[in-house]
Amino acid sequence: MLGPFESYLTMRGIKTFPLRMERQCANASHVARWLGAHPKVERVYFPGDPAHADAAAIRRLFPANLYGGMVSFELKARAGKMFSASWIRSSWWCAPPRWAMSTA
Image (cartoon, rainbow, N blue to C red; front, side, top):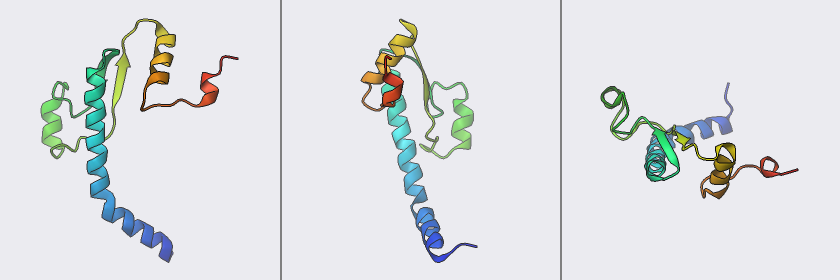
């Protein structure tokens, strides 16, 4: 059974859920477009992409512009792991933990 504070948090979360989902989907769409235009990115996987193999089914099943927040991508293979690490390190939107960047 929920207590008063947990109930308050649940109600507050339910009230803001539509706005949070809309913003999450919009941000994912912006990130997918940015990645698609990046010269070091080979391919972007995002359900809202018009070139997606299942674009017709996705448009039929999902509300307009609400395709989810999941974005994945492939980097172009040039220098393997070192290229990937340097690209991630230089990206403004991703910062790996310090222990992963140690050279010891």
